Length: 289
Image (cartoon, rainbow, N blue to C red):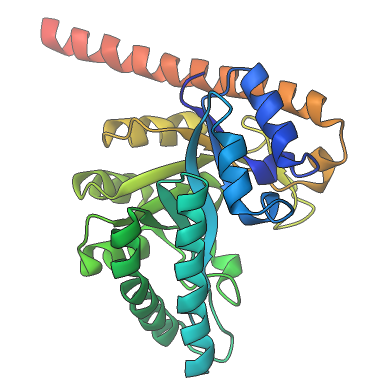
């Protein structure tokens, strides 16, 4: 399971050390560290702790939240994101994931301009400390307060406009699975070398909470094997990051939940192998005929 990464928020009831102990016991290859998981001990001590374990830090989560009607607030957001970049260095994270933000009093077009300006303002610091910035598009249901970047196309457009190797995209299936342009935008993202991260979970039917009822892979309606196939075809060979917010799963014994994550991940990779197998057979038949 070298390509499996788990976000600390997924097993939220565990302290960082518990997550590290249990992930490594299951030979999980990567961990994405949320800021709340390190606040009790600080990022410097957290970084020292993580180095004791045979696991790779994939990303630090989450920066962003740039738009606002107040210029003073926007500057505070820039300063906060620079601090987040320094914290990412402390925990040895090569990437900061950006939940870009939105402000109800600012129209979406202006919010997107402010997001791009915010990213450009922190970019020199990101380059100086060696931490990449991943723009994560969020589902349109979050366009009011969480993010004005709601499609992969919008994220690709912004990354292309900024045109810097340190700025790319974090693709979360929960937010983009519904998009009828997803395949072509994944191909575009790959062609631009902007696909920095791939987050997996599932959309439960019916969902009881738009934020806190994500499902394990295979627990909902997202066509994970097809999206995974598109991502692979786009040249992505990085970690597959399990990011689940769920009151139901958090209420469980977390050892049980981790076992369920591992089982769901194995099923998910097997399904992906099947679609690759079919593709190979198809290509072989085409060649023969």
